[in-house]
Image 1 (cartoon, rainbow, N blue to C red):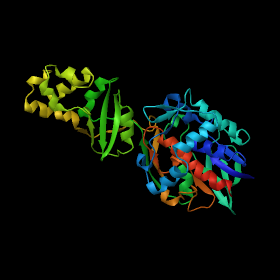
Image 2: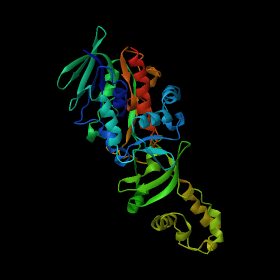
Image 3: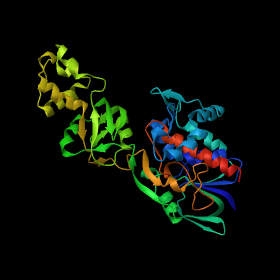
Image 4: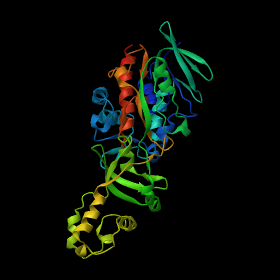
Length: 378
């Protein structure tokens, strides 16, 4: 009989298995290879973590998230990676990526799991427990173990095997699951914003306000709507209703009146975007000196552009899933179920969602570290 079965072969599962490399562990993964999502993240270079770390960068219960980040934060993670000859490089001032490719990360995991049992192309169908022993039924067999760790991720990227099995297992043991939704994903548009589609391919710097949460970075106009880092970041906070975009961050509109240049040259946006907004506002492209007070008032809309997205691009384009297994029913120091001894939940399957920039991988690794500390002692 196995001591530990890990359901899933992603970031949290592989970190846990690596930390438990001297234990009897079986990994069950539905994909033909391990780390499928890890390999495609961050443009194939895997945004591992972020220099700016704390519970304020997560959606979820901060009291649940905090112990994991305290015990194994980005500094501990970087030290662990350096110890295994991986030195991530920093980009965008605070984000850490693999230098060449995500395979650098995956190679570490493969090295430390090579003596463990890895079952690929195998879907988990159900988990049951009888006389303190778990039985995990898959499409190919039934396996028994003392402990079961659910690290199956969320619903994002169905093309690489994402499924709801983690939530189904949780519910079968009496856990509640907070409603899930796509996150770190683009927004679709209402008819009033369809003119955005004509700007497909353009990118501009913005600040997006969703319920007081400010997300800055670039906004990318796409065929289906809007995307880009600022939009993906904002999506973890948006459920429905209005959000507000500042298309002119750090720009004072009053300064326009002092200039002899045309608006299309003055406003710090791509000219095609400026022209499009001028049409929407019913304004002509004129020199700043000739702008009237009422025209300046109209331009203020660019700093407070409010609209309600029609929806999101969906799970197929989402980087993560928000919602998940309720953290009120999981021990923050071990990741063990409070409802069933020996059952654990890690990473994205839990109701914890990080902002864009390496936070979700950090959560995967930190939650795995907490779980590993408990399992190594039991």
